Image (cartoon, rainbow, N blue to C red; front, side, top):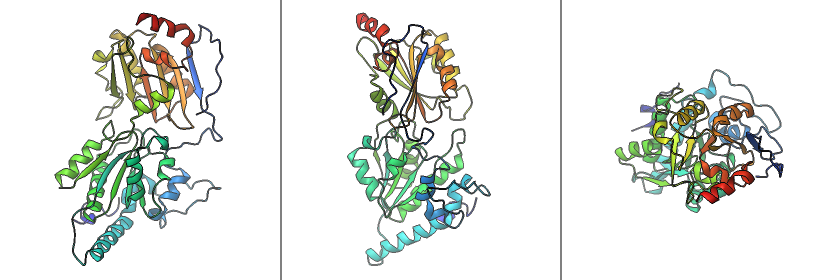
Amino acid sequence: MALSSRLPSSTPIYQSRNPNPSPQIKAFTLNCSSDSPKASPFTEKHSIERYQRDSWVYKTQLPQPSCSCQLPSDQDFVRDYDIAMQLPELKKLVEVLREKRRDENGGETKGAGNVFLVGTGPGDPELLTIKALRVIESADLLLYDRLVSNDVLNLVGPNANLLYVGKTAGYHSRTQQEEIHELLLSFAEAGANVVRLKGGDPLVFGRGGEEMDFLQQQGIEVKVIPGITAASGIAAELGIPLTHRGVATSVRFLTGHSRKGGTDPLFVAVNAADPDSTLVVYMGLSTLPSLASKLMLHGLPDNTPAAAIERGTTPQQRIVFAELKDLADEIATNQLVSPSLIIIGKVVALSPLWPHAMLETSSLVESR
C-alpha cells in the first residue's frame, strides 16, 4: 500500500564538594562542567543540529541556518507538524527505494526490508552496543525522537536519511504515533533498512512494543536491539547500586505519566512504599510532588535518600540529591528539566557523591 494512501497529504567532571559536609545540609546539587551550560546534547525542537541533519526535508520550507546565526522562528507551524510537512520528500524517497530495488532484482519486487528497534541508551554514545552501532551505520532511513542525543546521530552513515518523529513533553498525539507506524511499514515494504532509534531501551517505557505489534500484524519482521535503560546507565554513572545486599532486595521502574495524561497517575504508590526496594521513576518531574506525598503517606520514611538526574551520562548532566521530603522543592529550585530520572531508596546513600555519605553510609553497612 502506498504511503500517500495512509497519511494525509498535508497537515562528566563534577564540581568539587565540601569534604566536611554539615549535618544541617538538606539537599545537594552537582553540575557537570560545560563550555555552554545551556546547550543540550539532545535533539530539542529548535537545535541547530536538528535543522542540519533534517535539511533534506525542510529545504523548501525554511532557510537553513549556519552555526554562527540564530535559529529562525517557526513560520506557519512548520515544525509543529513535522511528519505532514515531510510527506512530499518521504513519498519521493519511497519511490526511489522501490525503483532501486527493482533495478537490482531485474524488475522483480522482492520481500520487505528490515525494521530494527534500536535502544541508544541514556545519552552517552559510548554506551551503545556494538550491534546497535552496526545497524545505525548501515541504515537507509532512521526515525529518531528527542531522547536520542546528537552524539549518537553523528554516527549515522553519510547516505542515510534522518527523520525526526519526536514529541515535546505534554504533547502525545495518537495520530502522530499512527503516522510513525505507517512510515515504518511503508519503508519496510519498499525494501529499506529502517531503524527506529529510541532513547534508553525500546521496550522500557519506549512504546517499542506498540510499534513491534503493529508491524508484526502487517507481516513485517521486527528485530529489537536492546539499549542500556536510563535506570542502569545513570545509576552506574553515579555509583548507585540499584540492588544491594542488606539494603535493597528489589528494584521497581515506574512511569510518571499515565496513558491519558494528568497530574496524578501514580496510584501504584500504595504498593511501592517499600523501604527495602529501590524506586526509579521515568518522566516523573511533574508528578513527583504527588508521588512523594503518597509514598510517605503509605509508610516510606520522609528522610529516604533520593536523587534527580537531568540529562544523565552526558557532559550536561545535573544532579540534585535530597531526602524524599525535600526532593520536589529542590528540583523546582534548581529548575531541572526533561529528560530527568528520579531514584528513590536507601541505595542512593551508597553513592560516593551523596553529600551525607560520611554520616549515613556507615550505619547502612552496620545494619546489613
